[in-house]
Length: 112
Length: 117
Image 1 (cartoon, each protein chain N blue to C red):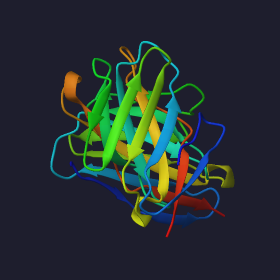
Image 2 (spheres, each protein chain N blue to C red):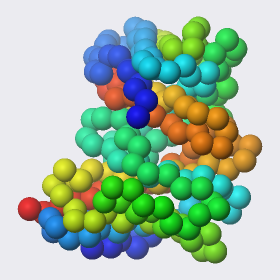
Image 3 (cartoon, rainbow over the protein chains, first blue to last red):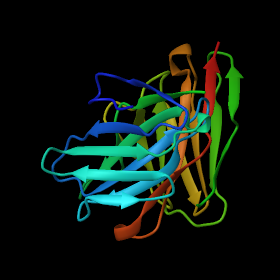
Image 4 (spheres, chains in turn blue, red):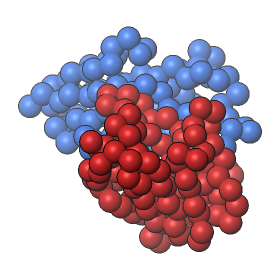
């Protein structure tokens, strides 16, 4: 399953399918990006990061893709599991900014 | 990853009282910590940057006298919500920066749900 931009804040997928969560970031000068996972009532958990000199980075079951031309970031989760159900935030940082700026988030619901 | 401990996880208080929230880096030293506020189903809003040994830097619109931040050591930052009112009810989250400029990561505490009656 895939969501497009921030107009679909909830993404529902079947267990075992691949998920793609998208994020449009705001600042063309941003050089560092992170994806976080937040479960209900908990703090965000680091998933994966990528610097602007890369366009792809892979982790365990997750891949982050960066398209600087259109200021777009995506998180791909392979073989989505019920435990992946959470809200996912992208965050960006740019030179001179002392803290991360968070996107509005996407809720991922995994149907068993 | 690095561990950031935040306490309490939940607090209920009467209007007019002050509430202190602690944020500790357990296995690393954090010269910089951040405090965020999050409303239900919303994203994280940066409130302030806590710098060890110096005054916190507040974001525009955040009342310094309302949200007191103290970063007295390299492992502890505290946020005190003074004279809390129901509109201060929210989820507060701290985070600490690990690493140098080129490889820094941000790790979060588990958050504090504040409910002001």
